[in-house]
Image 1: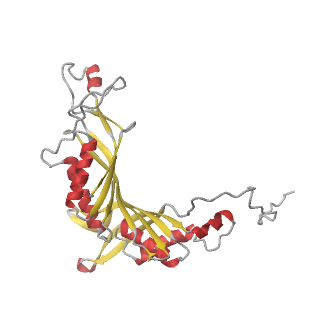
Image 2: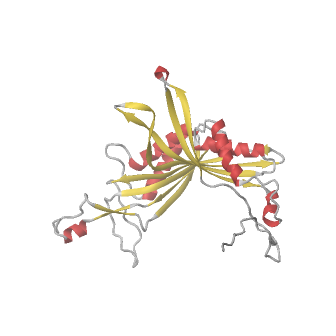
Image 3: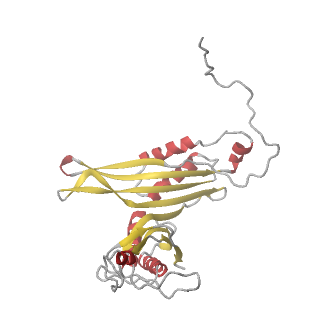
Length: 325
């Protein structure tokens, strides 16, 4: 005999609380993470064809309202902007706008939330851009084909608040580059640092310098040409990290190099207000000792500069923030 399972809704008691006492809810917010969207822009091309350009974003939203304390403490979901609604908003804003930069896309999403939902007092929008570059076929740029670039990403964090007296405030925007992976195979050293009984690292006047750089910056309030600013700041960072194409520039330490690059950016990008740079080391260690032990390299030969062992752990972590004032 077969027994039929009860597939209907639960009909027993629905006790929603186990606690016997309420405590102060100090901080609360809710949002949607990892909303992915591809925006394809269409422009008329030569001969009646179309040329496409693309932006792929991953969006994280976070909404704030003191009214939402009731959702946590009173089992009251009324007026709550659901996380599914937040996900759908990303697609709606992508449809209605050009979504031409992570900064502007984040601003447009933030403005939508505060315009649509008076209950909200603020929002936090993070946008990460996966970079695609136009494919080239037989020396010509393809109309609608793209190749994914390196792990480097363009990102932005937008925060926007509403006050009862002033209405919706100007968004605070932080632009970012994440995952810019760089390598110099010479013109780098590290010497004259403090040494004691715990130190094994010798002085070095020629080494590989490599890092996976993250840079974050803010421009003057009211400046919205984000793509041109990003391109200019990135170019100055590359110049500061590498130096001239012929000969480069010597790096006394990664600290000195990233400070120099930040100063170049502030000097040559007038709208830039401040910039911070984070650079965890990527190590490329010489294999001289191993090659000598294997008899591949003459024991009397010094530092061998052509074979290195890549490693990223453990890594030093270097950070600085440089401001115009």
